[in-house]
Amino acid sequence: MIVRLALMGAMALLLTCTVLGQAPMADAAADPLLTQGVQDLQAENYEEALAAFTRSWSQGPHTAEKAYYLGLTSGRLGRYEASQSHLEEAVRLNPDYSEARLALADLLVNLEKSADAQEHLEYLRARNYQPAHTALLSGQAAFQQKNYSQAVTYLREAETDPAFAQQAKLQLGLALEAQHRYDESRRVLQEAVTVNPDSLLAGYAQRQVSVVERRQKDTQPFHAQVSSSFEYDTNVTLQSGQGGAQVISGQGDTVFTQLASLDYQFFPHDPFGLMVQYSIFQNFHRRITPYDVLSHTAGITPSYRFSQGTLWFPFTFNYMDVGSDKYYTGYVLSPTYLHMVTPKIGLEAGMFLARNYYWYPLPFAQEDRSGKDIGGSLGAYYFLKNQKGYLQARFSYLRDATGGSNWDSSIYRLLFAALYPVTENFKVNGFLELTLQPYDHNWFNGNPLVSNPKRQDKTLLVGVGGTYNIYKGLELNLHYYFVRDNSNLPLYDYHRHIMGGTIAYKY
Image: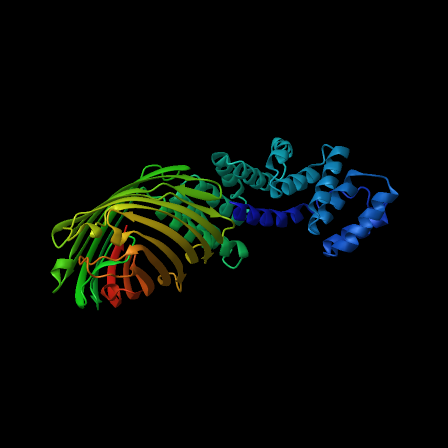
């Protein structure tokens, strides 16, 4: 919002010059300094013009015309407080000075003091003075006050004047977007481009069309995704939730994966949001079928959007079969807050609470993996290309308290990730994750006569990939992952390479 208003302010400040030369020059013939100042102002010699107007003012008399020109020149030099003071003086000296009122209203709106501008805009509308310019400023003021329907009314009036058509259409597109009228917003913004395709405003309008299209897609209440992958895994492994690998096959195999997910957002445009989700994941191994996984996940996510951040409370339930047998159920609550320090920098903080149940047969009590997890994370984002890409860093800690002594551990994880849109349709991503997982107790292998050390894993996970948008949500992805778990127990020390491709459709 701040970025938009800044741009709108820059546009309207340019319009201030349209009142130059319209003011009466009653004092000019009797005041050579005033005449010289006007000539310097028209020649864009602003410092010289200000000096001439200042000397004329100090020598007297104090007239509305002199105050008006002092205000215009100060504004051109970026001295907005002085400009406001001089223009207010001009209106005080001559309440019927429409030129000064228009310039003052223009300045106040662009300083985001739209409430102070209302009196002057009402005066100008009542006298039908410069109707298109006045309507443009009235629309901008209404936009700042979030009275979007009124802004649309004024801006539609302003766009009928060719002199203000492009500015009015651009701002009208923003007002329609704020009302979630995305199709109309996109059409009006495209019209703004065609008015003068080579202007700076046209460039901004064209970029805003992409923003509107993305926002329209993001705020649709219903989203769905289906994907299918083919991969080769050099060391098929069964992961155990948040911790390290539970079972390692030591063999490679081809893997076919299917994923489908659905989610529905009940209040897509409101600060408070409520989303329900469901996904199903399934993979098949050509030879090592005992590692086939079927997983169902259902969740509900209340959220609240603040002016500079969003707070989520995702709660999910997961059920998993492995090799056609019941293997795992889990409940996870992971509240997360993302605060946007600037449009490019975000800070993230989160918590993680989970209750896990593993249903595989226990060879001995120490292998009971069921338990509770608690942890948290801190992270930062640097967004790229209008938030289409990012750089990410995150540190997390998780305490895994289980029923069996073999799995009690602390997990320290450091993640670095990046997503970069090379073109509109092609993006690349990569990540590096380092995990240190010390276990609390000496590892027990079922033989009380054998003493083993406490297990300690150091895991490196690296991934790279590229995604190409084939056509309207149909994407092709190629990826490669490498896992190295450096464990002091040979049973859990392994390398793993995964390479493959995914075809996905997102609605």
